[in-house]
Length: 113
Length: 237
Image (cartoon, rainbow over all chains, first blue to last red; front, side, top):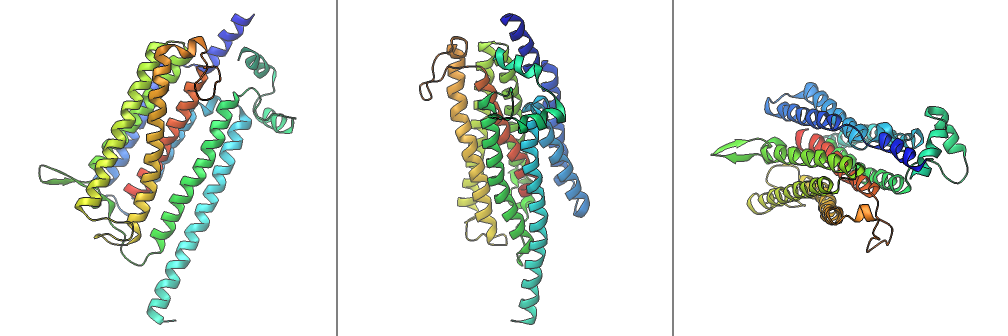
C-alpha cells in the first residue's frame, strides 16, 4: 500500500528530463533574442515590446516549469499570482505619477515658481 | 509524504479545489508540503521588495530631467579595442540560466533518490552562481574604480543612476551569494547521503528530505527570475 502510494507520488513530482532540457534551451534562445534587440539597436516602441515579450516568456517558463507552478495546487497558484497582478497595477500608477512629476518639473523650470 | 498524496488525490481539483481550500479550516494549500508553501510565501514577499526597487527606479528614470546614462555604452566591454555592448551582462545572463537548468536537474535527480547526480548538479549550480558573483564583482570594480560611478553621481548623466544600480544589483547579488552558500551545504549533504538516511540537520534539527532540494531550487530559480527582470529593465531598456 505504502509502496504503491510512493510510486504514485513520484509520478506527480518528477518529470522526464526532456522537458527541462527543452525549457533550458528555450531560455537560452529567448535570452539570445533579447540580447539581439540591443545588438541591432532597435529603438522606441519596437524595442520595448520585444524586451517585455521576451522577459515575460522567460519569467513564465521559469515559474511554470522550473518552479513546478504548473503542477502546483490551484489555491497556491492563485495566492501567488493575484498579488503579482496587484504589482502590475502599482506599475501603471507609478507610470502616470512619473509623467506628472516630469511635467511639473519641466513646467516650473521653464515658467518659474 | 505518502499520506499527503492520498489526501491530494481525494481533494477537489481546479477552481472547486481553490474555493474548498480557502473555505476550509486550519490549512489552505491542502496536500502542499508546508516548507514549499512557506518558501513560496517568502518569495512572494521578496517579489514585493524587488518590485519596489524596480518601480522606484522606473519612476525616477521617467521623471529626471537630465539624460539617463545609456546602459548599452556604460556596460560595454572592450574586446581587442572594440567595445562590445553589454557583453559581460549577456555572459552573466547565460551563466545564471545554465545554473538554473542544472538546479532543475538536481531537483529531478533528488526525487529519483540519485544522490550522486543530485549532489553533482547542486555543485555545478553553486559553481555557476559563484561565477556570476565573480563577474558581478568585476563589473562593480570596473564601474567604481575605472569609471568613477558613485551612488551620488557619475560621468555619464543623471546622478541617480549609481544609487539604483548599486542598490538593485547589490541586493540581487546578495541573494545569489546566500544561494551559493546553501547550494554548497546541500551538495555536501546530498553526497553524504543525508537525504536518504533522513539525518537531522545541524541547524533546524529536522529530518532531511529530498523535498528540501526542491525548496532550495525554488529560491535559486527565483534569483534567476529576478535577474530576467533586472536584465530587461535595467540593462536593455
